[in-house]
Length: 367
Image (cartoon, rainbow, N blue to C red):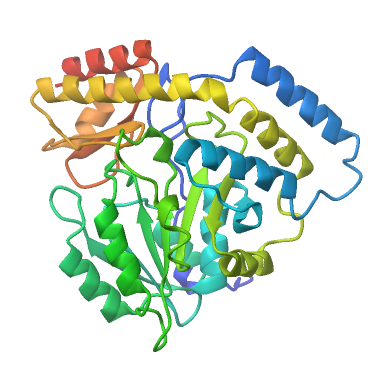
């Protein structure tokens, strides 16, 4: 038998992925439950058809028209105008994160975050051979700033990963806390006088409540800040696989070094631009999902459950002595949610009104 050269850090590891099961109601991966409109589908088909005429050629590796469209969108959504050259895109925000760690972390360098948070973060660190250091959030899932400061200056990270709203808790990072982190991260990097890159993962930012700002507002003042977004959630385009980042020119330039050649296909670029052209219709969907989220949280509280305040399109709820039995009871009734986060808690994505009602009925029966 040949002894293959497996990497030791991958021993006993399993591929990432939430369960994909054929059930009537899937509320486990925070998707937008509304399918694309007929108008959007028609425009997508037209854009992809036009791109198909040049599929014998490599795609635009700098995708500047797409970056211009993303710049226009961010200006409308957050009120912040980001120069197109300060925007980077890739196949989902997962690839964006991998680019950031490839460019700034890696062997001999450290990545820091604070759990519970997105379960892929340690895998990005593992895959780039970066040291992973994780602190703990407080009982209410907020950050304890004294603990954050101690961990950051002890670990001297190249990259700090902060999800806001946080997954799986839905917790948004207060502006004053982000400001404090950015200020001390200016000198907390891997070498004396070097900064840490602070990545604010805003995958769910469009769902934030009124008055909750975007980290984009701080980009011009803090060159060590990078803000990531995705079209998978609010845009209802999880199948498109388009994530993007806004940062200073120096950060973006480093990402162009580690990207694979022609990493965004011509089809992806065309489809993303077509979807962005329909962003107006998303506002009504987002408003409906935000209202459904708040209603769902109220319904769960009326059942006597603990519910974390959420600025995302999902709700974390508990606490159950045996959360797996509750998860299984829901699955037995055709409802798939996510068994993730702190022990005793479960996460449900906001679905259509009919899906939310089916979930609540099944949960009452299970409980």
